[in-house]
Amino acid sequence: MMVNVAEQPRKVLVFHNAAGQQLLKSQLNELEAAQDGFRERDIEIESIAASAQNAGKWKKWQVDSSEAFTFILVGRDGGEKLRSTEVVKVSKLFGLIDAMPMRRREMNE
Image (tube, rainbow, N blue to C red):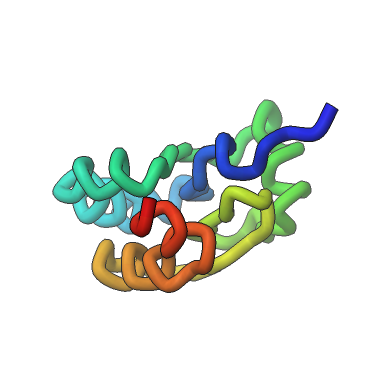
């Protein structure tokens, strides 16, 4: 069965280890201030700590476990659209998403 790509939410995956706690906190503060924008763009946020239980996700997204902090934006198609080891500003994130063809169609509908 084919999954309708438009029904899959976009995802923000925030990988972090103990050294990345401060960056994680800064990123979550940045994201929390824009919850309406996340709802409007259908974005789910997932925080993924370095742990044995999450090792599969770290491997799947090829995040080095020595990285304190890695931010990944995943599009509706399941592909990686942005990767950063720094806190990503909401304006940059929304600008990138709003420039995507699928998002432009959503805004026109």
